[in-house]
Length: 112
Image 1 (cartoon, rainbow, N blue to C red):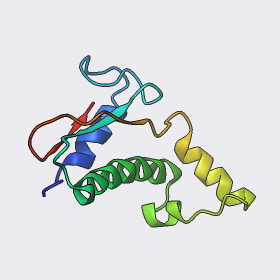
Image 2 (tube, rainbow, N blue to C red; image 1 turned 90 degrees about the vertical axis):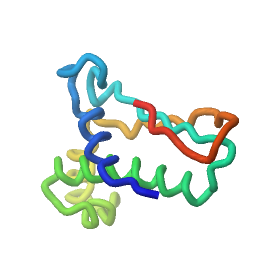
Image 3 (cartoon, rainbow, N blue to C red; image 1 turned 90 degrees about the horizontal axis):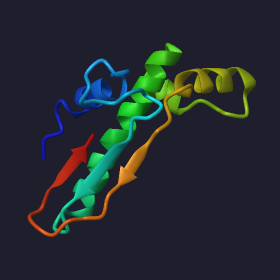
């Protein structure tokens, strides 16, 4: 399975801010919907879901000015680290919808 380019496409969709009418109106309203076929393996489904979540964490880390690994390890009980965490997420909720699977072949779609 090849997920090359998915993060870039998702970032373009999420951060569009209404620039392209067919993409999200704003990061606040952007919803990424994952829809799989019933034949999709659990492993593939989780890989795609992880990629979607990683895209959001990458956005948050960039906005906080720190590497993604460091962002994901921030301790929310530390007030300074919580400030960085909140700065990254501000105005960009992780809106992921998991749609009802369809009958058909083994595959997935990231619906934006």
